[in-house]
Length: 321
Image (cartoon, rainbow, N blue to C red; front, side):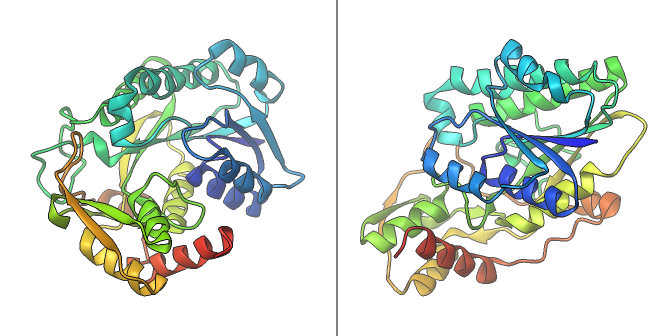
């Protein structure tokens, strides 16, 4: 049996592939290696996945015919799916709405359509996002909230994925689980995320853009904690149905505290330009993880005081600073 991981060259996807391989699983990884950010970083992640049990396929999940043809030789083997492919990023989604609709909604639908017919398919977990919650949500963000008013197009596409999954679970008796990620960070991360771009700018002596006078809070979640949550959810088999969970750190961090930790780890002060909050951004993300803890023992362990310096050390090594 095999596990399919879409977005295998991505930040979270590459870590999930490695964790599965270390468990002795056979892994089929899919990615289209798009240029949303530096492709060289994606290829470097794949270099870390060279293993006799890892098969990599370049394919676009939004192209149903291409994807089906690429996966055909492996359909009988695939039992589990970790669907992480798609576009992330709130601000980028506002500039490129059709790109996000195609990758995140059509791509999600293509995965559902292919595997609803697969004989050995047992369970799919997929990437949702804290962005589904939008504004005016009580903190911490609870699964009891309706999450029907996301303020970013990115959040809207992820909420659409949840609704599509609920429909397919009901129609075809599938087990599908959405995981609402909260600001995942760590080595090999996404360069468009604030902690990464701040680190790059501070090393280069360039100014960083800080929104809302720094009065922003994010529930930073260490990558290894996220991966443990993904695998915990993946191997929790039920008869059928759609479920979703928060995977966060359950502790929102002040943006200015994040900058201070980065400054200490880098050994340089940041040059800060304060700017208004851009459209689509929320002021706080804060996860209620009680259901994840109860159902599959999710237990985040790494704080930003420990995690951010580890990221900086990786950054120095990767960029040869």
